[in-house]
Structures are given as C-alpha cells and as structure tokens.
Image (cartoon, rainbow, N blue to C red; front, side, top):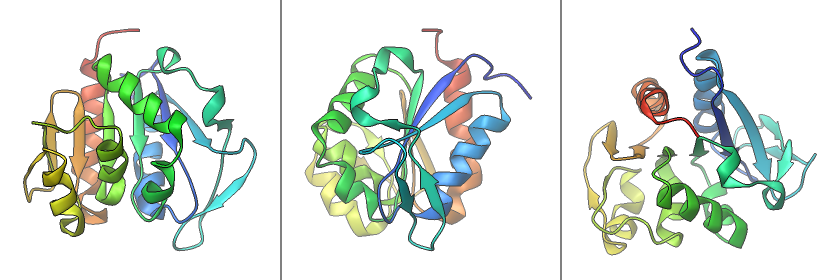
Length: 178
C-alpha cells in the first residue's frame, strides 16, 4: 500500500502516552506509505508510555513547521495533559486547523484540541471521562467509535483503533497536496 506516499505526519509524544494510541496510528499511517515524525519537547529524549513502551522524539516541537506536514496525530493517555501546556504544540494544532489539514485525536487527546480552542461547533468523540470538557469547549460529543468532522478525526479508546486508523488514513489520502 502506498496511497499516502509523499505525505508527512507529526505524531506528538510526551510522558505517559497511551502506548497503543501512539503506536497503532503511527504504524498504520506508515504502512500506507506516509512518513511519520515523532515530536516531543526534547529531541532525542525517550518518552515512556503508560505501559512501558518507549518512543524517542526525532524532533523537538520548536523545530517543526506545520507547512512542512500534511497531518498531525495526538495520542491519548496522560500525555495530552502535558502536551497542551506547550505553546508550540497549541500553535501547531491551530495552524493545522486553520489549513484544514487532518488532525487525529483519541481518548484524552481532546484536551490538546480544547486548549487550542478549535472545537466550537465540531462533532467529536473521546473517552467519556472528558465528555464534559469537550462539550464545555463547544464540541458536539457523540459516543461512537470514530467521528470525522471535516479535517478532525476522533476516537474513544484502544478498541476503536482499527476504525480510527483507517479514518485518519482515508482523510489524509483525500487531503489536497501541500
């Protein structure tokens, strides 16, 4: 499969990401031919997932320019609560949103989109634990495995990873070239 050949995606990472919610979409997008770069606060740092799986940041957030990428993936776990505190992460998400480029978020990743203030009127899903947060940010929340609204793809939790990965890849394949 190479329908995503030539596409580039950022996958954000910080401590205590949900292991499957980072790696499953990363590998799914790579299987379709896209290049995925792991980005953290520190280039070269190994971040450890909730279940002990490491992820080494290939780039620091500050090195990234949204115009060089076609999409962004935000993992769940406890990492989103940390990720949303970095002004550069918020800037990147806002720039992807303004450019209508694919944004993937699963589980607690909605916190990053909330902090970026991009959910007003957007239909999404997330872990039910942050439903109130999502709705208070103006989102229309659905209890469905995957919800796509424009360029934003959201999913609830690990059992929803197969349809989430497919939906993100479909959206990325349908997005116009950079």
